[in-house]
Structures are given as structure tokens and as C-alpha cells.
Amino acid sequence: MSINKCECSNCVIKNLFVYTVKDSDLEKICLNKVQKKYKKGEIIISSEKDVDILLCIKSGLAKYYRILENNKQYIIGLVKPFDIITYLVIFLQKEDQFINIAAVEDTEVCFVPIKEIEQIIRTNSNFAIDVIRKIVQASNDVIKRFTTINNKNLKGRIAWILLDFADNIYKKDIFELPMSRKEIGEMIGMTTENVIRTLSEFRKEKIIKINGKEIEIIEKNKLKTIAQYG
Amino acid sequence: MSINKCECSNCVIKNLFVYTVKDSDLEKICLNKVQKKYKKGEIIISSEKDVDILLCIKSGLAKYYRILENNKQYIIGLVKPFDIITYLVIFLQKEDQFINIAAVEDTEVCFVPIKEIEQIIRTNSNFAIDVIRKIVQASNDVIKRFTTINNKNLKGRIAWILLDFADNIYKKDIFELPMSRKEIGEMIGMTTENVIRTLSEFRKEKIIKINGKEIEIIEKNKLKTIAQYG
DNA sequence: CGCGGCTTTGATGTTCATCAAGTAAAGTGG
DNA sequence: CCACTTTACTTGATGAACATCAAAGCCGCG
Image 1 (cartoon, each protein chain N blue to C red):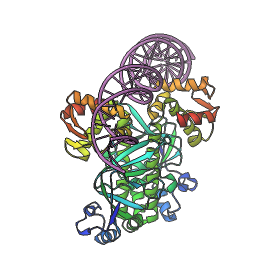
Image 2: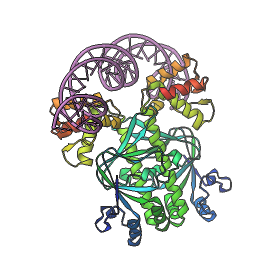
Image 3: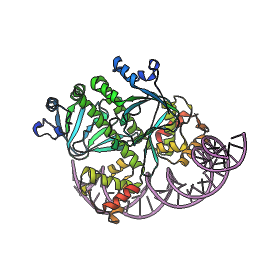
Image 4: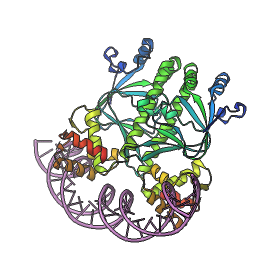
């Protein structure tokens, strides 16, 4: 992890803060924000600490997850560049906070102290409404993913997540899987062996090509059908 | 469904609106709120309509659920008296809104137009922060439930939900199950037959007594163990 | 009184987790 | 840089957990 003050003039984050934020507020945010780099695997937010920052991804990929009693990870979702990843955790009491966030790829994030954000919420009502909107949206995304995945068999789950990577994360039909087979299993509720087995089946059926971490989707329509009816 | 203006002087809802709400705001809320009664099974919020109200349960019990492509219900959670049940849906665009809410028991709810709430959010920053806090809390509850349930086997799931009814909903170890075996299955991801089978096993092992919809928990500690390790 | 939905139990088969064992890849320390 | 260790990946065999199918009793309701 390394810390740098960032160059606000060309900051990608600015575009994120909705137009409801006044220029003067933006200045304040930018003055106090800090940019950090995390290597693949490093923990960004731990469930053991208070979350006193709003955290936005500039590049890379992160996962948010829960550690269960049996010490297994349950990956709740991924967070990609330009997402603000601590929305679902802000203003939570420390004792209620069970979510961890870690870098899945090398990741650059931008910190803004919650105090700053709270100040803007308090003085700019448009921003307050907008924050609520975004939190509700994020929460609904999670609920939708869970209810979707839980109703699919193993083939359906793998098909679904491959399409998710292709369409929502990488916007390409050929991409490097950012996570291990184990982590994929932890995200869609299946064992490592079955993740591998199912990927292999898709390869044998020539629906995808596999080269280590690289996946190429060949027959997207078949994949869609499997994702839908599987 | 029947509509009545309610008696605000003895309104249980008042106590819900956090102390951050000024008396004058409370007046405004109370002037515009409407109380409705729903019979068991009636739909309170449909995913096909914009949600323009904040909705609080005064008595009874409601479920929020998604209808999946295969036309099955997925029950995301239950909402009990004094909970505000539309937090997770407010300010969502109609096209993103997939959650339905229906009465599980005869239910009395209190409506406040979102416009009113928005007005208070805009003028009372403490209230705005408090709304965010509550939304985040509600969203975390859902995530926690999903990740917990998904990691349990069938016995563990039934044990867990029985304890949930006893400890969080009814606060008694003897209670009437508010829902059918089918609905319970739809909430914890198992078939109706297996809900019944598992309940029967618990009965045979004398962990619970069953009399139709009435459940009495006899061996709570055993149930807790099963819920934890199952 | 009869119909449809809810409940219950048993029998059967499929899906999936677990176990085992081996190969490949990626870190690690001398 | 190479031997070493660990971690990730892969395939097959086995059994357990769970869904599905079937059949019958029960209850509420028009």
C-alpha cells in the first residue's frame, strides 16, 4: 500500500460526484482526499474497524465479502472502477459492520473522509437525496444478484457469472478471470472442484475457450440460454 | 383494504420517527399520512408501480419478495410492526424496482408520501443522516441473512428460521407460524416437502412441538446448536 | 358436498459435495 | 538461479443431501 496526494485536475473521481455537488464542495472533497494503491489480495476495509471513509475505485477490482463462522469467505460482490464501494457500510455502527473489502487485482482507490461527505450531505440537500438513491441502488443490486444466483443450478451459475464478467466488468468477450476458481466458488456458492468441472464442460462443448485465467466466450447465445434456464 | 385517517395523538408511528425530527415536521407528516388495512395475502406494494410512499407497519406482518422468471416467489425478508418497510425501495427508478410487498397476516400500515419525507430530508440534515443510517442497516440485515442462510444445510435453515421467529418476531418460544410451509421454503431456499420433513424430524426428536401452524420450541439449546453448525 | 390448495409421508433419482491423487504454477529461501 | 514448499488447478470415484414424483388425508370455502 502506498499513499499519494493525487492530481485533482485530472481526477476521474470528479465525474462521479454527481452534478448536484457544487464546485466549492468538490474543492473541499478534493483537498482532503487521499489516493492509495493496494496490491492484489490486500485488505482495504476490515470488518474489525470503523469505516470512516468513502472509498472510490480508480482502477483495478475489489471484492466485498463476509467471513463466516466456519472461517470461509462469502463474496458478496465485486466493485469495479468508478464505483463507490463503501456506500453500503457508511454510518454503520462498528459492531454491526461485518463486511470486508479487499483488492482482487492491483487497485487504486481514493479516500474521502466521511466527515467531509457528511458535511456536504448536511449542507446540500440534492446531494443527500442522491446519496440515498445510490445506496438504495447498490443494495438492490446485491439483493437481485443473490435471488438470481440462488435459483440457478451450477451450470446456470457459471454461465451467469461469465456473462457478468463479459458484459458488466470487462465489456469484452475475451478476458482474464481476475479471481481464482476458489474465489469464484465463494461468490456463487459452489465448490472449487465444481467451478473447474463446469468450466471444463463448457470448454468441451466449445461454448468457451480456456487458457489458464483467460476465458473467451465463443457461443454467447448458448451461454445466455444456460444462464437463463439453468 | 380500507382507508382511514388515523388518530395521531396516540399514533405508534410517532415514536419511530427518530428524535431528530422536529415537532413541526412531525405535525406535517401526521397531517398527510394515511392508514390502511390489508388482509392476509393482499399486495401492498407491487413491483410494477412507482413507490411514492414511505410505509410503516403498525400491526401484523408483511413479506417483501421478488417474482422470478420461472414465476416462483423468492421471499427476501419479513417486516414486522414498527419497521419502515419501503426504505430499501425509495427513490428507485420504476424500471429498477423489482420488489413486491404483501401482507402475511392482517396488517395495518401507515403511509407517508415520499414528497413529505423528501421535504424533511432537504430541510433537516439530522433526519437525512438518520435515513441513510436506517437504509444501510436494513440493507446489511438482508445481506447478513442471505449469506447466513446460504451456508446452512436444511436442518440448519429450519432451526435458524424458527429461532428467528421466536426471538426477533414473536419474542416467545410458542407462536403461530404466520406463513405456509411453502412460503417458508421460498424464504430459505428449500422445497415445501423438505420444510415439512425437517419440521417433522424436529418433532420426532422432541426439539419442538407442532400443532398445525402452532410451534412450540422445547429444546432451544439443541435448536441453537443445529442452527449454528447445520 | 365437492373442489382446490395445503400438508404429510414414502420411494426414487439427480445433483452436488466430498474425498483422493496427481499435475501445474507460483512463491521462497539458500 | 535452482531446489523446495506451498498454493492453484484438474479429473475421477463415491456417497450424501436434496429435489422430484406420487399418493393420500385434511381443511376451508363457495
